[in-house]
Length: 547
Image (cartoon, rainbow, N blue to C red; front, side, top):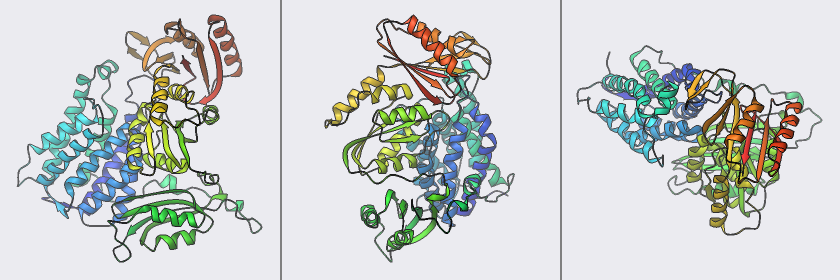
């Protein structure tokens, strides 16, 4: 039976269906990687992104599609990970704008909303690349919109939308030569198609229209209650989080200032406060010894939608934060992975490390939490991965308590270069950011990893198990061992005018291989200063910074 309209309850069921279909295909989407390396994470990022939206949409419990859409858009934005995740969040933010004020919608209204999604998504990307999720969504939204009439059903719209999305996905190879060479379609676009298909199949009844508990693996953590006994003394306090709906009976939601709530929480000794407001929803994260006081303060302004309180002595995923720092001129927040690299970055002046990078992109919400921790007038952000740029920039736009400068460091080596010139005491932020940007751009970066599939890239015939060097984003050499790939990459790079070589060894590199390679590089490049760090990073056996 075809539907002329859908409401909020049907829409949220469709979103759950889209998430299910995406989760089923996440591994396959991850494997749609141009380079034959084990670093594909698009499917995982998009799944994590949409799950955050579902948590908010499910909590809304409304028959109004406008209210459900608004809740979903809010949650998906804060949970957005990776460039594809951020673009996905902007697609649904635009759709939400097109659904404003609607309790239910038909095909023509959906067509307008989806076109608004196109506008919003393209506006979020500084230099949009065709042949990606942007293209597939634009072409399929436009195709479906051109074919709906006043008497068209919602199924008519989605059927046309998906038919063109499938065709458009195949055309991504024609638009991006690098996809044709690797014989893959765009991964973000494939992820979006999975979502759209899941939504449509739920609408038509092919998938059961039932909701499920999201993030079950995360919510079912085992807590060792024996870590806090009758003789224990509360040392770290409670990690307290809640969603608050501002109510007109207690305040004016439109003019409510989040600063007043933050100040009150600080007044009871609250630390690591992360607080932000979207519409009439406030989300709070605070470490406190008196969670009841924190809840009482918040309830002066509205009523709770969700509450979570965890004793931080019980080994939860979140570690206790140090005492709140005094406000200072600027702080540095860096995205990094690997124990050695994280430790090195802190020694070089990074005030806060956001865990993540290749294969583990942080969310917008994680950035905002870091900004709050920094407690500075200015914050310099080093994403250190090109797939983290958009999340960092979106977080910077959302955060209003400091001036945030995102330096587009594409990898950890560029982050290392930027940190080397960021020194305390500088007050001219414009000059400091420009200097760090130049330092990052001046680093030649090489990453060494094993190929996970056969491929022919730029004329190089690569076999599974070969070691490849990716220099400044392009595969430069292939070799039979990681150490041979390092030497070949250095030989291929222009080191004649270089003075410094910095080598970061990965988690699986043995002490013997590290020592032998260090000795060989010193012999081959006696005029260069060589520094070697045990980075401990995953994926890449070696990373090289040449300056």
